[in-house]
Image (tube, rainbow, N blue to C red; front, side, top):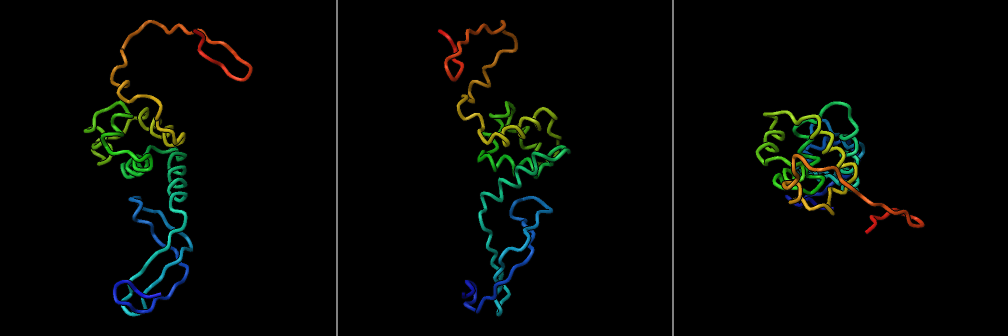
Length: 159
């Protein structure tokens, strides 16, 4: 294998590497393949199954007992595949609020923290629920009246 920078010879071995590209401090990948150029010192890191790695990081973050840090909020938002604007719409808040959470100028409230964790845990970020509907939810309304009918294997809304 040749170095992409200087075309020198690469040597590969297993090392522990800080994973700063995640945006989180304190993430270490243990025993990953690192190829170093013997001439210029350039290193290339092979990260296997990166999507699985990111899911594990997200799972670990949502299971922690302390509130999410700004960097963790950014990581989880990105793990859902949302821009700041998309995230604000799904959270039912303004984009400026999301920016403040992610910069650490204000702390994410406990309810928003739990909602984010639930969205990441379900990994189904309310895809079948129109986000536009969130802005139309009334502050007060009469109680819902539902007629539900059991079929052989499921429940359905009765006509």
